[in-house]
Image (cartoon, rainbow, N blue to C red; front, side, top):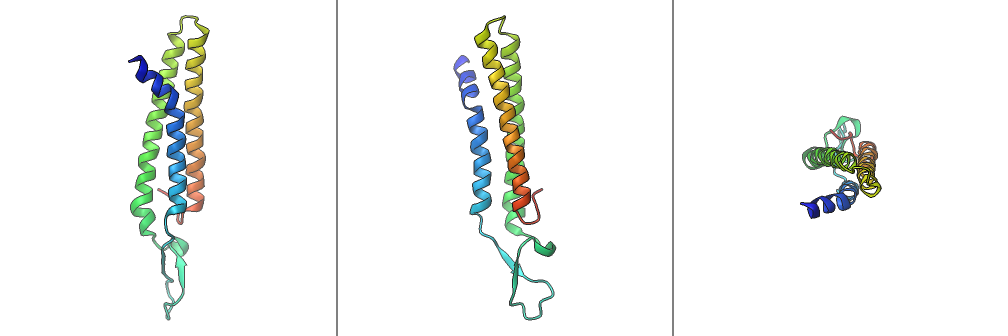
Length: 132
Protein backbone atom coordinates (compact mmCIF):
# COMPACT_ATOMS: atom_id res chain seq x y z
CA UNK A 1 0.00 0.00 0.00
CA UNK A 2 2.84 2.34 0.83
CA UNK A 3 4.46 1.85 -2.58
CA UNK A 4 1.24 2.66 -4.46
CA UNK A 5 0.77 5.82 -2.42
CA UNK A 6 4.37 6.81 -3.11
CA UNK A 7 3.92 6.23 -6.86
CA UNK A 8 0.70 8.27 -6.91
CA UNK A 9 2.40 11.06 -5.01
CA UNK A 10 5.45 10.97 -7.22
CA UNK A 11 3.73 10.86 -10.61
CA UNK A 12 0.36 12.61 -10.18
CA UNK A 13 1.65 15.95 -11.42
CA UNK A 14 3.53 14.28 -14.25
CA UNK A 15 0.39 12.45 -15.38
CA UNK A 16 -1.68 15.65 -15.25
CA UNK A 17 0.90 17.57 -17.27
CA UNK A 18 1.07 14.69 -19.79
CA UNK A 19 -2.71 14.80 -20.20
CA UNK A 20 -2.60 18.56 -20.71
CA UNK A 21 0.16 18.25 -23.29
CA UNK A 22 -1.68 15.44 -25.11
CA UNK A 23 -4.74 17.65 -25.50
CA UNK A 24 -2.57 20.49 -26.80
CA UNK A 25 -0.83 18.24 -29.31
CA UNK A 26 -4.16 16.80 -30.43
CA UNK A 27 -5.49 20.30 -31.04
CA UNK A 28 -2.64 21.06 -33.43
CA UNK A 29 -2.40 17.61 -35.02
CA UNK A 30 -6.03 17.45 -36.14
CA UNK A 31 -6.54 18.39 -39.76
CA UNK A 32 -8.49 21.57 -40.32
CA UNK A 33 -11.58 20.40 -42.21
CA UNK A 34 -13.20 22.81 -44.61
CA UNK A 35 -16.83 23.10 -45.58
CA UNK A 36 -18.43 24.87 -48.49
CA UNK A 37 -19.27 28.48 -47.75
CA UNK A 38 -22.97 28.95 -47.09
CA UNK A 39 -24.75 30.97 -49.74
CA UNK A 40 -21.95 30.69 -52.28
CA UNK A 41 -23.59 29.97 -55.64
CA UNK A 42 -20.38 28.78 -57.25
CA UNK A 43 -19.44 26.73 -54.18
CA UNK A 44 -15.79 27.20 -55.03
CA UNK A 45 -14.66 29.03 -51.95
CA UNK A 46 -14.45 27.34 -48.61
CA UNK A 47 -14.21 28.51 -45.03
CA UNK A 48 -12.84 26.69 -42.01
CA UNK A 49 -15.45 24.79 -40.07
CA UNK A 50 -16.81 26.72 -37.14
CA UNK A 51 -16.64 30.01 -39.05
CA UNK A 52 -19.99 31.69 -39.53
CA UNK A 53 -21.71 29.02 -37.46
CA UNK A 54 -20.82 26.07 -39.69
CA UNK A 55 -20.56 22.79 -37.80
CA UNK A 56 -17.22 21.07 -37.32
CA UNK A 57 -17.73 17.31 -37.29
CA UNK A 58 -14.23 16.34 -36.15
CA UNK A 59 -14.30 18.65 -33.15
CA UNK A 60 -17.87 17.70 -32.23
CA UNK A 61 -17.33 13.98 -32.67
CA UNK A 62 -13.83 13.38 -31.29
CA UNK A 63 -12.27 16.36 -29.55
CA UNK A 64 -15.16 17.49 -27.33
CA UNK A 65 -15.79 14.03 -25.81
CA UNK A 66 -12.06 13.50 -25.26
CA UNK A 67 -11.74 16.85 -23.51
CA UNK A 68 -14.80 16.15 -21.37
CA UNK A 69 -13.34 12.78 -20.35
CA UNK A 70 -9.94 14.28 -19.56
CA UNK A 71 -11.55 17.12 -17.60
CA UNK A 72 -13.41 14.57 -15.47
CA UNK A 73 -10.24 12.52 -14.96
CA UNK A 74 -8.26 15.62 -14.04
CA UNK A 75 -10.90 16.60 -11.50
CA UNK A 76 -10.95 13.14 -9.97
CA UNK A 77 -7.15 12.97 -9.81
CA UNK A 78 -6.93 16.47 -8.31
CA UNK A 79 -9.50 15.73 -5.62
CA UNK A 80 -7.80 12.42 -4.85
CA UNK A 81 -4.41 14.15 -4.64
CA UNK A 82 -5.72 16.84 -2.31
CA UNK A 83 -7.39 14.25 -0.07
CA UNK A 84 -4.24 12.12 0.09
CA UNK A 85 -2.15 15.21 0.84
CA UNK A 86 -4.59 16.25 3.57
CA UNK A 87 -4.43 12.81 5.13
CA UNK A 88 -0.63 12.96 5.03
CA UNK A 89 -0.60 16.37 6.73
CA UNK A 90 -3.09 15.40 9.45
CA UNK A 91 -1.42 12.06 10.15
CA UNK A 92 2.11 13.46 10.24
CA UNK A 93 2.05 13.69 14.06
CA UNK A 94 4.53 16.55 14.02
CA UNK A 95 7.01 14.88 11.64
CA UNK A 96 8.22 17.73 9.40
CA UNK A 97 9.11 15.41 6.51
CA UNK A 98 5.65 13.85 6.37
CA UNK A 99 4.01 17.26 6.67
CA UNK A 100 6.17 18.65 3.86
CA UNK A 101 5.32 15.65 1.68
CA UNK A 102 1.59 16.20 2.23
CA UNK A 103 1.84 19.91 1.46
CA UNK A 104 3.88 19.16 -1.66
CA UNK A 105 1.22 16.68 -2.78
CA UNK A 106 -1.53 19.27 -2.35
CA UNK A 107 0.53 21.93 -4.12
CA UNK A 108 1.24 19.61 -7.08
CA UNK A 109 -2.45 18.76 -7.40
CA UNK A 110 -3.40 22.44 -7.47
CA UNK A 111 -0.67 23.17 -10.05
CA UNK A 112 -2.07 20.38 -12.24
CA UNK A 113 -5.60 21.81 -12.04
CA UNK A 114 -4.38 25.32 -12.86
CA UNK A 115 -2.42 23.98 -15.85
CA UNK A 116 -5.54 22.17 -17.08
CA UNK A 117 -7.64 25.33 -16.70
CA UNK A 118 -5.15 27.30 -18.80
CA UNK A 119 -5.11 24.58 -21.47
CA UNK A 120 -8.91 24.46 -21.48
CA UNK A 121 -9.05 28.22 -22.04
CA UNK A 122 -6.44 27.92 -24.80
CA UNK A 123 -8.44 25.19 -26.53
CA UNK A 124 -11.59 27.31 -26.36
CA UNK A 125 -9.63 30.06 -28.08
CA UNK A 126 -7.97 27.95 -30.78
CA UNK A 127 -10.63 25.39 -31.77
CA UNK A 128 -13.33 26.52 -34.17
CA UNK A 129 -16.57 27.17 -32.35
CA UNK A 130 -14.98 26.49 -28.96
CA UNK A 131 -15.34 23.29 -27.00
CA UNK A 132 -18.24 21.89 -25.08
